[in-house]
Image (tube, rainbow over all chains, first blue to last red; front, side):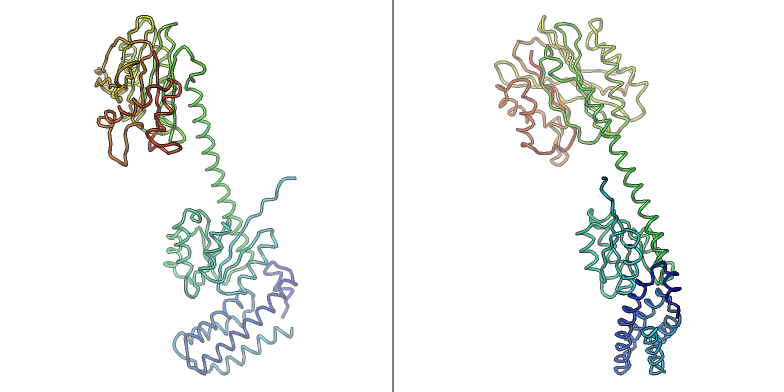
Length: 102
Length: 373
């Protein structure tokens, strides 16, 4: 992922952008934990809210893949289904961690 | 060096990352940013810091953006702060509701920091322009007030007229007006008027009336003739619904005759040098309304030391207590007795202090003129 390009698209410098990426990773991992918990408790509203939070942040940062996946998760949870969430959470976690290592 | 003008923006969003993104991109451009991740905290900062603009997320847990703006618009301290909504909700109803509640604009999420910056700039510019327009208008009104006060003769400049005055315009441009006319060495005219309405037009009219008084209050005309002539011109120039109540007092200090012409104005109070205060009631039509009016006219003999009070209805009327001057004037006579020993120059102020208490704010424009024979 080209952070320099994403930063310039947002009109901020790379250093600031990296700070935001760090924050994004930390809060998103926290949200992912919330989704895991809601999955074990079978709570769709909690899963939807945590997905919503990741979606909003990812969309603003320009992380389109993460935004798309969390948007789908939010929508599905809103409709009352947590089907395949195990695998979604896995994918999501990988994407977020990839940011950390980039 | 000129002090730098820093604009402050309050950003409200429950998503911390969004807040930081806004903070970084706006502070880079020189704005001072406050952030809040919930409604109550946002209101606390809005009241405490009075930011120049607020970026407000609609969807927040607990107190929503709608709740926050509603409360901000409810308070005079925060209702002028422009609010831009951040909304992920795309339905029109929610946007309209935001505008309804007083938002100036909205930004859809996901937002781009440069769009946020552009909208913040536009709305700060608008707000600055509006504020300077208001300041400009207020300063013009103040100029009118100053011009109006400059039009009012002072006791210091007219010692031979032996009068004291209290004048207070409630609005920036008041509806009350008085004038002193030095008709000859020993004849003085005193004029007090109250225009219907207190707008800027009214204050322009005072200039016309002042000019008319100067032209018509001369030794050639009797007091009644003077006022009739002024009336006839005013009927021509005043717009419909505009009129004034007025009292004209014509004092000849040689013949010791005082003539009072009353045009729908509260009665003159006479405070004799020795004796009880009494009202000189004479009914008359208002000025500037009718072509062939009837004005109250009364001529009395006076003694040196007698004091006369002409005043506008703001002195005796009270909207709060539903008192009109017809009943109010009588009830004030005992108050005049209390100031019978006060000099004519101090009497008007003393009267106001007795009636309204020191430093109190009367409900209406007020002018009180005290004349000593």
